[in-house]
Length: 128
Length: 360
Image 1 (cartoon, rainbow over the protein chains, first blue to last red):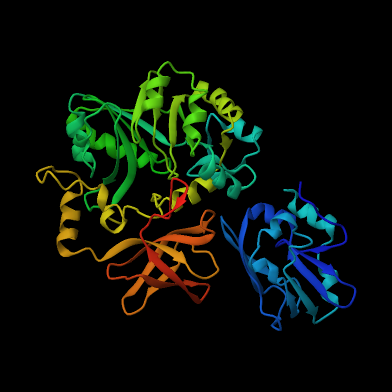
Image 2 (image 1 turned 90 degrees about the vertical axis):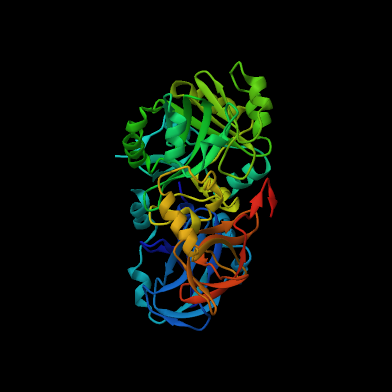
């Protein structure tokens, strides 16, 4: 069974969102997503400073098997990306919720966070 | 409804993640495709390939029949058990399938064809066989396990319950030994040494357990694909189809042009193609930047033209992305590949990347 930490928010497209408490959020892909993808070998990260809208394909994670888009869970500006993933994308397989984070965002609106799934809803989503 | 091989329960027991492949429920991996890949390159792994189709061809004129059916020439097979890789072409020179055929004796050959092409292959073979009075018998009740890797033979030999162990141990590469109900070929699809073991379905689960106990790790179709691509081996349906001739699929070496008077299906078409000059060729690509090459990506060759990747992946052995691509014949040593709108540089190489564990 995949791990689904209760303090995070989720999307149906398998991103997780952590509220950092300082107005910014961190985004990654869930443990369930990395399990579906298998061994990750490449991550194409978004550009720092770019402004994106919720639902935009902003990043690509590729496993040996397939390439998969990562979608912007909320609208906002990319503040920072996890550069370490360029050389060691497999960190996502080992630590999807911590060391394998993808990027940090300055949300353009407060509201959208509340519209995301909580852990229970996400767990139900991936149950079938 | 997808079919299950006789090893389906074993895959569940060993933690296989099942996917649909060519109408069969097959394990894509048992945890990590990457680990399984390295296991085969460095030690020994096993694959359930029971979904593949084994066909016995028998009759007094079976040699004549196969010399007509196949682009490679079975007359080259003089020794009992010797194997030959060949394409089966249509009249237009397109590839219906690629296969391995073993010479058993003058009136019996055993053929292994792909799972995804089973129905059309059997129909085609039957249609052509009628004129030669050849009996076509699909051995659906046989399972097949491929044991591959530098330690595959040593480990497999230790658990084989056949009387012919000595003959099996001594057999040369690309041969097979008939062991009664079992048949063991020193063949494979990984670029490593090893066996492909055909056996009665009822005995396959027990062999799977014995091999696992001897340290041969179960590997899925995912690793099978990265291994074959590193070895530069074509995949039917991706690297060649009925719309491509062997000459533009990197398979010209499998066509036996001599003797010139041998008539085989598709000969006229590919002869004409050769006479007119083959316009495209199959090459290997190594991506020089970060990214992953995938099938259908566009290849751009400056001042020459465009081509297409037919299969691509990340090579676990080379830690770089590699691909097979069909490009203009004039393509030199470099090209670019379009990935998500960006052009990335790739090196053009012979389509063999790894052989017997070593980077080529």
